[in-house]
Image (cartoon, rainbow, N blue to C red; front, side):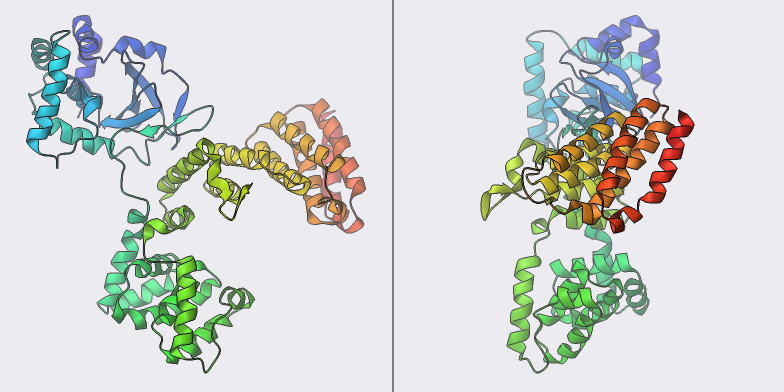
Length: 508
């Protein structure tokens, strides 16, 4: 649809006033902006077009879609254009109350819900004549509430992943308006399920192509995990043989488990050959029965691994399983949004990090994993958000120094040089006053070398950014750290130190 109606509103003050009241689409409120600074997780542009009297805002996205954000932290696509959105707000003035309705709902239920809402509106002001007049002026046909509810639901379901709204300062995602979309594992597994079906049909070309493609192979194995069929043994053996090319992966272990669960002792030779692929595989498939084992022993080993690591319900898998596979398939938007919401949940409830067996201890590795995932996706703001919380939760001096060192690197790469300098100052504090003995050998190990390297890299960045005084001060601190390193650790840093010193002299 075009935005013909929007142009008419902008040209005709009377029509614009009628859209603002009683239909709460007020172009004049666009000048005030939203209640807080926001941005799209995808990085796409946003243009404020209108607002309403509750503090909500209508934004136009790059493709013309309209994103509505309320003042309470929820947002959703409600139309493919401004004109379509205007049709919605005029035809369904209580549309926010219908976000959970579906075309699958009984028509009588939808009409009753709309009638109840509009009767409540009519108790305070008129909408019928105003709606008819505005529709006519803008050239909109009369559409049934059922059709408009269907359009609304279809639009809301398009919100993720491309139109997820973030608080610009905190990076927190707005909640979804309306229905949740399918769980991430559904789109991730779709291609694997299709490939599994082809393999089961005996498509020899598919057998070759799936086995040769590491991503398709992994996803097909995951599809087989949740759709276990008696006739799959030969194709599972085929995929297992080829998965050894990727060395020790979760999917290699999964393939071995799925084969071993059948209890065919004839597969022991294949399984033991796979186990001996390399050192990592031997460790990852440890405990496997030796030659001569019985079918019961083989199945017991497989069941133990299956129960502890796999299972038959996709919803029981760690989120990281699906975000990794999504990213491997190019579904980076879906992976990013899922990871952002996972991080949001941790910020809202840090008890999620508590270890069940030791509730007073936090399992913070999830946060560092999220930081790495965001960095691999190229989303430094979210990586920083995860790493900052991770660093704040570390207890030992070693962990504090290591986490702050990584934080400084991310801040430097994001161009946040003063923040990076502060993080390195915190690293030096941990080295100087550790409070425990975890850092007693930092001068002899890689951590010391990495810390020295990051000091010099930030010094270079400060010099290149035209901050000579800060560069000189940090160079002094860098040289002091280098002076404490063992000879072996220092040797890997000296060339960078010389180059940094020359650069600082140059800018001075």
